[in-house]
Figure 1 (cartoon, rainbow, N blue to C red):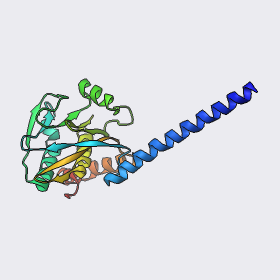
Figure 2 (figure 1 turned 180 degrees about the vertical axis):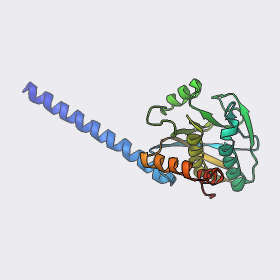
Figure 3 (figure 1 turned 45 degrees about the vertical axis):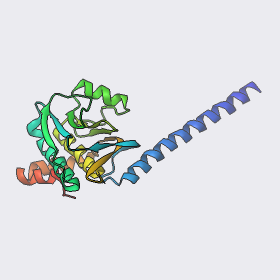
Figure 4 (figure 1 turned 90 degrees about the vertical axis):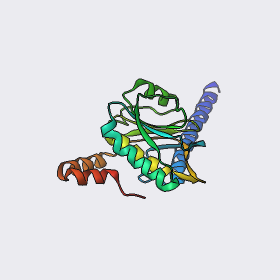
Length: 211
């Protein structure tokens, strides 16, 4: 009798874990579909609230990476201007987790403060993210795109552009937590383009189409 009770309890626990796992997977999928992101990120969690862009909002790129990350920052600034008329300044600065006066941070995951902050939000910079993946986090006071490379950061900004929502004379980015990385075939295509395409055309391809 005792063994039968233990067996029933274990079975119930396993079924509960399976249901929880299915529920989490469905929630992530539904969040991704609700945001209509192309390509669809591997992991998406939609949260309450959002990051409001105002006249004082700045885009920060990390010191030491301004030249490489400037294109990503300019692409984002152009998108915001197209949607709202607001012109965002792009500045170089040391990484700062606290977003004062509405700072959009485009930073690298090599910075331990960035990694630890994102980890506390459930975004791990593990081997899956790799060199070409990215983490994206936004709430009412933070908007951060972080990656290990310029390619990864640009991919994150391309996703961020799709999150812009008009809000009167400004725009808002919904509160989300995203982890994404390219598939193996995506890496092969990108490497082929880098080898076989002239630098200017390759740069235009990486920037992607204007929406």
